[in-house]
Length: 518
Image (cartoon, rainbow, N blue to C red):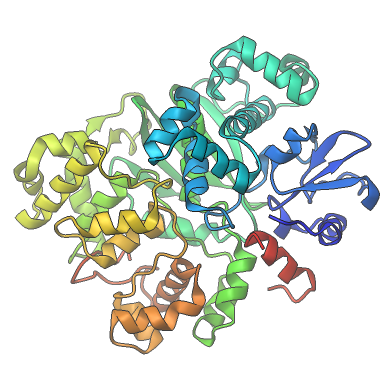
């Protein structure tokens, strides 16, 4: 990615939040790198060096600022001039894959050689897989030092380090002081309880968190998820580590306060990555609004809700099953069915708060149970068979429905399964795969809004919206709900899936070019 120094310095002087996370500035006289929104005095242009990522700034010898805290900056989105392979690898590294696996194992999972993977990441991001992973670990460790009361040993392992010695050495090398020395200089927020860890997740504004929670509330799985009082709660199990989390909207800024049970600390990186995806925290609303708002069909909807997000899914398999359960029934009926599935085939989550004290059944559990046991919740045999087949593919490792999966290939694989058509596949690509260009062209509300009668015509009409068609679909669903007085969701899809249904200143286009990687 090419950075224009004059544009960067202009954004730095203005502390323009639209550039937050799109570049970082290294100050040569201090050796510190900052976010463009840093409250410190703006350095002169001749003392600034600009980097497309924190990892590149650190690779060049700069240390993270303790005032603006670069580890909190929103990330770059999934289509920001990053090749598919690099995006897949980065998503898995963000979730902590290299904490327990080697680069060779990551490459093997992605179907390439380790040498090819290293070349791809260096070409696209400027760093190696190990350098990117180390930046992520140190960023999380620094955040936990600031925001939690965890001990240094707990922080080391929660951030993915194999030993305290390695943590201390890496931290001292990167930040110029030992973690214990930094901890002694910090003022800590009030503790959230002996069994919880608090992490702040900054989101690029504008952020319509209320609309996102409303969407999730209508689909919350009984016993597994709850949405109330501006917060999302759920049970969690990641790689055998069980617990719970609460993600609460912060009222005074575009951010989410995440509280995670201490039992999940060994998988904290994965939990944070999943929650960021769930809240679409790395979206670029200015870019999306500029592209979509130019179309008269969407202009009013964009103006009304410029911060609308595409809600993700904490667990891709869980979301896929929930989508199949919703075929040809109302959202409320699908919620009832999902609750029955959890009651009969899920498992207990001891120690979790009431309402999120059950785990959704794993793919292996549903595959072993078979279609008959699934159908016993009151499901047609064909749909139960679809869920069983999906579970078999996921349990066997032949199908990946997580954020790091290749969208086009996964959509093709999903559509090859019985009972999953284009609508369901694209809905899952929107939410589970985090593909911003997924587009359920067969959706009735979408076709009506576009004034067409076929999926092919809808695809052609929506071509100018690429690569943000998933956001266009969300805006059309939201606008329909507002006009009809319904919830922000489309009606049940009867054929192949459920109906889950710019600021006027000169810096806008520059910010959008940065966000789009141009």
